[in-house]
Length: 113
Length: 115
Image 1: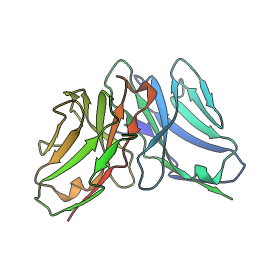
Image 2: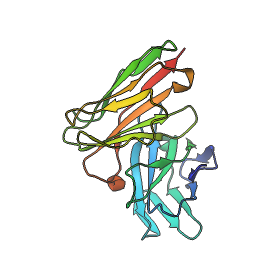
Image 3: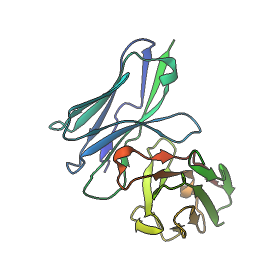
Image 4: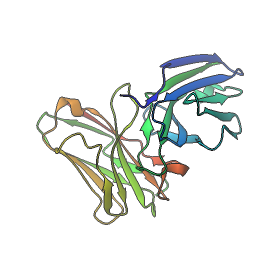
């Protein structure tokens, strides 16, 4: 049973346009969500996070939106740049529970010049 | 060091062989995690240390997997009698605070191939 789902294995966008990566979760105990970015042969790098008490968090070109009732979050990248091409992982955990993060399978983003 | 260092970067093991994977976390980081990432999948939790104490080992897939962090810094993940399904990238991550709210810093991983 996959508790964190990223249903789009890949996404391709034009440079300068918006990239929207989606993530769904099933465990209602999750109350903190993170996005990681991964380049080939490197470890994942923390990008942005959001607590369940918020519905939006913004950091430069990156914005994460959380819809708790739908158990859905999304990462918006505006404007997209070729250097954003990577695999993006959505992750979640319960602050009152285990320290472990539960990851989705990832979405490979390609930004075309 | 500046980041989380893992060694070796690549390891090829014959089925049945024992392997040991090393993780050097960022100096002073109290929390250390091991994850397993199979091809095409997201990282999956294996085990968690706070200093030298192993607080959660619920993700270790079998008793062939063993992790230690005896002095609260360097950690070793040992896999005994490796099998083909153990082939994966093993990621180590560390964090300066208890709790994942600030995000981990991951190493580049060890790619284990069992032949």
